[in-house]
Length: 368
Image 1 (cartoon, rainbow, N blue to C red):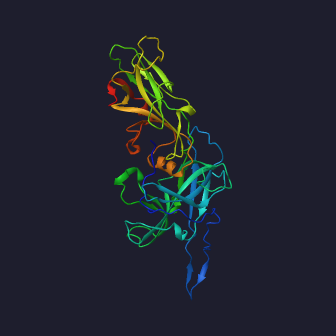
Image 2: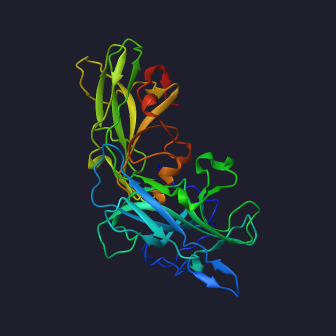
Image 3: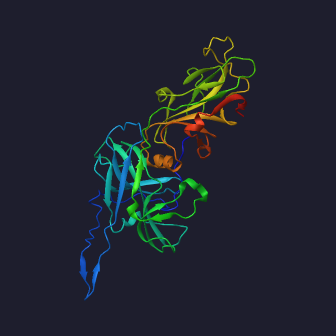
């Protein structure tokens, strides 16, 4: 029910080990000094460096002190993402860090790209997290992952490098948002840096609204029913209950769903809530939710156009793969209004803020 990490174009093949290091320990030892080569003066290549910046979402309060780091990632061989160890880590609380990279990555981080024979690639994502266990390793479940940058992966290419692709260190944009049409990555130099925008902890509110077209001569209300991990609705306790009258409606939410309306998702590394909006008949006209097996017989709901709309809440995540997946599809944690099939994550589409206020309830909006 949640988005999963997209398959990487670079860094294919499961690889999970590596050498950790902070921004100083990752220095390869290259000095940049002049060398006497028998009458000629030469300069060793500059020490590779990349900057990362952490930016919290406006209006949010982060639960702790964020740490920035570069984390090794690769394909897990099953269409998901394998998260390895850190290549470089900044000081906790530093909103911007410049990492000194090794001259070459650890050998066991290099993976052959099956689409380009002989091309060896190591790929890292800039991420920010809050670690409840300062002595632990990334991925031990003690972290709240706040964000990851899928548009500027730190990549190292060596071996048989395709024409036009850079050797050594660069930033790679794999155009994940284009899906199967992404094509080759676009490379840029490390000087562009990488910007980690916060995704993990956001304002848990959402504004929903739109038009209501009465039909059938009945008084109706709209309830939000929490769906459990088995796909069953909680018929006894709605998340919200809105009586419908006039020509408009408002079903905005200002709080996360209560704990009993959430369940743990291993894919998301977080507790999530799934809420379906359903109409009911208020047969006695008292404006109260009483009950309820008198659902509208045609199971009408709330729609964007003719597509039924539901709500998805994703809590703070401990999974870098999940948060990177959110970034790839342009989503963030917290409340989201979505269309599509909740059992087919690739089919879900997140509504924009404007679309969430342009919904409709009426005789043309019905579940199949």
